[in-house]
Length: 252
Length: 176
Figure 1 (tube, rainbow over the protein chains, first blue to last red):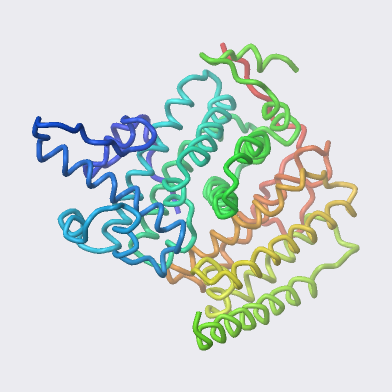
Figure 2: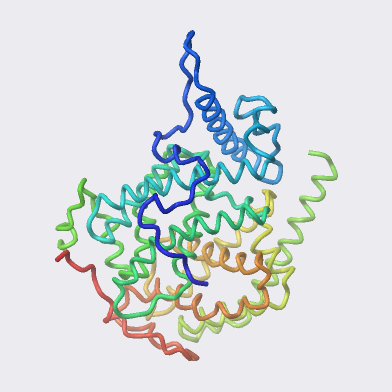
């Protein structure tokens, strides 16, 4: 199985209208202005959609996918059943939209973090850090990218796999740093899935405070096949400076 | 939870446990403690993939079902994942040619491999699981080769001849 082409920036990621999630800050939902001034219908609709998307993540965290129902989504979102069906056909449709929203948000954060550094190992370290902050600050969205029970639905599972492949492609850029041993094809997908499983376990524990502790471990894990354990451990311990100071890499 | 649902969950967990024990027996049966670490890893993976490829229901039970909302089965999967991680660590510790890793590494590696097997199962390619052997072997060994000066370059039955001395590993390239 070959990985897809590399997404160089978020403009290459398909969108179904949830683009705002990547750029509108962390919560993705807003309180509408009060008062006489009428709110444009489109703004109301977008707001409702964001509440529903957020509700999907919350309900998934409480019930998993198998026992997720439209009733549980609208309960978590605080909207009516009519509103739900104005936006989505069914539970799967809502989960797919929520998944895409979460994926775009994380991809935006990861690419922004990566672009703050110059060297690939530090880009990766920054990307891992961004991923962990995302999981800690937006656990409902993070669940949509890591929850194993989503594989119960073939359509959702395919989408989940495709989104993870995007991150696998970003990781595969490290292959050029490996000049000796060939790296098996399975490496990137196995690493991304391993990380997803690890994050899912931490999300299930509900202890967001521990996410930042994982950063050096994950960086070491992910860099290992490309740089070797010793160098991976060294990079994992480095402190990143804003703007990417590659001189750090010369400190042997 | 209704009594019937509770019974079903217990039954599912028992079925999972039996399947997990079958896999464990298949793996431990082929692990020669006197063989090199690389050969032990390869033999264990070959036995696991062969068993799962021959029994699609077992493959699904052990790699897909733990994630389908049954807490008991998931906890049992986590237990077995830790167990295999411990076996891997112990085998590495017993082998002078293998380096050791921080304790978080093995569960993550095993979780990643499980996911790749589950992927094949879900797309209906369980009968092709054994194709994963070379990649899985290389993927795992990379983590035990890295800290060692030589060692894990000698894997028997390495038809692709993909191994090279660890001394050829590059460091991070300085920015030009």
